[in-house]
Length: 160
Image (tube, rainbow, N blue to C red; front, side):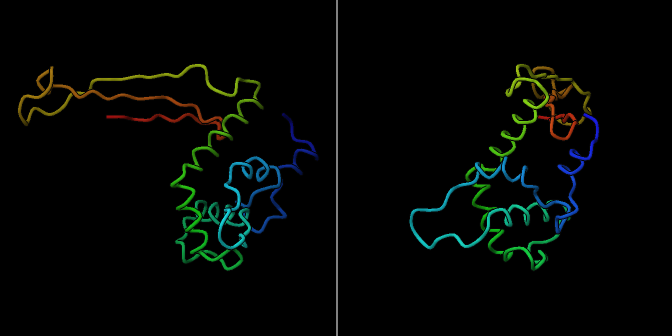
């Protein structure tokens, strides 16, 4: 895809307060994943888009909860939403949705059709007692290769 005036406008972040603020298209992709209002209790008064923008600001800058700028909702509100969404597995659903969307935009199937698993044996020190089928001479290490389509990188996950 080449850069045109139209595509530059789609990806421009000049009108945002902070570089990590969501564009309308980005918000449209994840807003349907967010939980709806609760049946009981007070109506929601906090804009969830602002909560997500605040969480992206924290993730981008690495600032503490209490150092969240005042133009975001109160840090306690943002923190409460983060803990709730983490507990219900919302971030995994959003990630899965974005990966599927990216794969479809690239002309591939939404779900991967294959994966790669690799392992290696690593020599260890000779101290300690006999352990395992090989008397503790090696250590088995397994790796799983996953493709991160959204960022254009691959990640190597180690499981000991």
